[in-house]
Length: 264
Image (cartoon, rainbow, N blue to C red):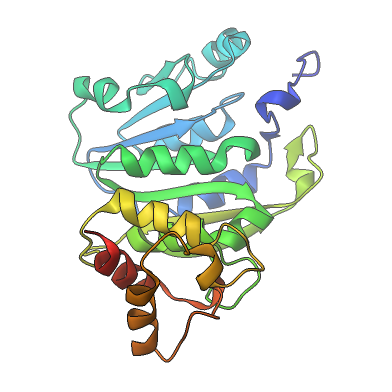
């Protein structure tokens, strides 16, 4: 693809390291009658590897310039379908109606600039993804995998940990891509929890998280001043905290209890 004009605006850094491609696929415990969604297949390198182990592969590619390249790259992969559309604007529930499958997966090298919106769309789709294995910017992967008290710990960390067990798989050098990005990447897996903590309102929970972490250097009293602080304090006291604590110190269980207590 020497003549291809890579678009930085689309986060186009194509993975071309065969060993890394194999390692990504090997992270996923594929089961029978599997359907894999891939976002941003690029030149189809990962897609070909997925087609070898999955029953069916559905790709979303926003760049129609890649159509002829993917047609050629995937000409021997009869179990692959490509939808040339923006994944974030697609109705994936409707797109999946033509498929019959037992196990659903998401495997992708995600464009850095829309990693979070893609993950959030996957969660809010309410589709039963058994396993999500994605390559993200190393810094983002560390954020996903952070623990309370760590600098990287934020609202998205808590949000993801509500739904998934998060596993760091391996680091990928920037030298594995064309063109070479400015940072290294990380492959992570999100494994759906068998049972999530009881929650009255998921939307309210998400809003509470965003508010709690809104100003990183401010404490809970300041960030949650629009909520009933007496109720907030009541919950925090149970865990030996007060209103001077910062959100980055609080674990998932505390945020769930805060959400359930504050939701009217």
